[in-house]
Length: 295
Ligand code: GUN
Image: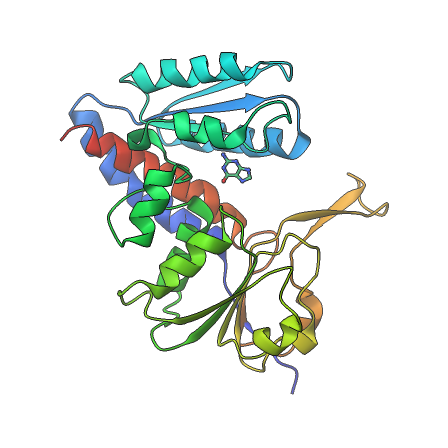
């Protein structure tokens, strides 16, 4: 019997999340507030341009006061700090997002730390990260927060399960591992975090009830690294050359989908899996920030 895993559609979950936001946005509107999100894009990285356009379009569609500041790639660090300061001081802006990666002459960490933590809807500021680690209410990085929503939607239990996270990035791996160990229903997991310096990674990934792949390497997770019946969450969005397509590339995840889907119980596709959740959670964090501004 060929295995047909449950496909975890982030596309569908993201629509549900955005639909839930609509009522909260209406309530804010009655109080004279439109959630304000400003994205700052420095330079012309093609993938970043696509993401920022999508953030702009989706937030405008929900009635946000949505802006994108497109700055020249030669913008200095001092100029960018000044832009962030102005946004920090602007009460109509509830969320500030500086799109990464930034050009090499700019210290990304310094820029992240210049954002008012109350407007840190990306959840990258040390205050936000600290709150996550301490189980305090704050902004959680959008991709891991989106994975939690997928788990909630599909009733994937994590308590008592072994979750293996592949990748130790500040944006995904570290916050994901922290979410999974929280003393909450969607948490209470035993977590292993593996990374580029882990010898025999498969030894660990094969133990996973839930495998979260955030390695940033196309089709890195092969079938032999996955245990039968595992739940597989693929965070990767990699462009690989493909001359047979109109654009000259196609998107693949960090998981070898065709092989892994033959043995797992559930899996997120690429595209249409984790990807759409990231923007949905950014919108959710911005609505939360606008609500917080009332208190
Ligand atoms: N670059 C890749 N992902 C992200 C993200 O979630 N936020 C920002 N600001 N930049 C990114």
